[in-house]
Length: 210
Image 1: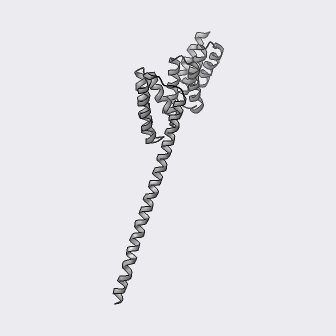
Image 2 (image 1 turned 90 degrees about the vertical axis):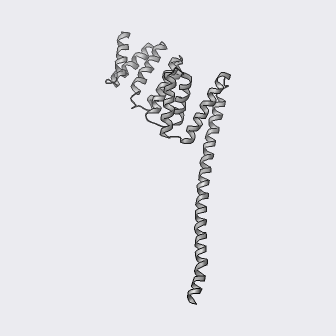
């Protein structure tokens, strides 16, 4: 009889334990869903900010609409994969280099700019800034080119492209008719980076200025 009574007591306790466990699992799942919703909300807000920023930058020409839509689609994909996802960084960078090699400078510029403004990588971001400076020089936009090279120098002083960025600023001074400033910059490159190829280029230019 005692055994029967104990069984009657144990059955509800077992049922309650199972219900408690199920409740705990349900609660954890709800928490996970809430976390995912919060992450999605954050991504949506980021996208809204980027779209608003793009719209505020000025009108889009008709012949650029399809290109911009395609580019935005690519950018959105990478943004949702993770702001600092290494695979996304490499894929966007490789596409930008491909566009650069194809002389599609506008497409390359969009990708390099997207990388430089949205990611953090000690190799690909300074390279992106360098190529943005080069594209600006091809477009004869000297002020913009100098800004990109200065940004590379300031944020990545030890990067292997930094010496050449200094030399490029000297080139910009020369193209702007500031020969004295260019000479000082070239001398800085020679003295600060004696073992870098940029130093040899700067030294040759200094000799030509004599």
